[in-house]
Length: 161
Image 1 (cartoon, rainbow, N blue to C red):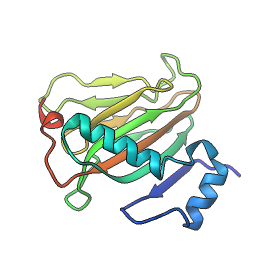
Image 2 (cartoon, one colour):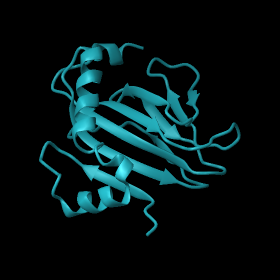
Image 3 (cartoon, one colour):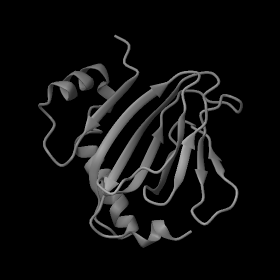
Image 4 (tube, rainbow, N blue to C red):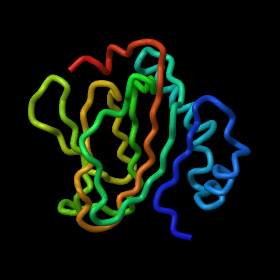
């Protein structure tokens, strides 16, 4: 079975018995805890570092081959309440020229910043104020787990340019 993209919707409800989650965990045992305890612990620790209480909104594991990209966007809307995005890159090998970089447009202006999708790199940014995109992948496989967190309070440390 070729699974290109796996998406776990968390939205605060227990998902452990959801048939899609059970199947996904069987297909991807290394991601077994990302949709459960590990994502919540990550959110608690990240929230403590940012001085806010974060709740897991969504966790998404994706693998994209050559040509895979995303247009420029923000990770929140008026209805999602997302405030923090975190991307953990899992690609086995990446070299300059492979493409697939995360391009971040600083909220205060200035030149965009490209982040290489190197294994174990973790990128954290504001879902509300950071415009970003994924550049087209030229070769190889770009694998990542994205986490989105919501909060009922503003997070000043992420909103300051």
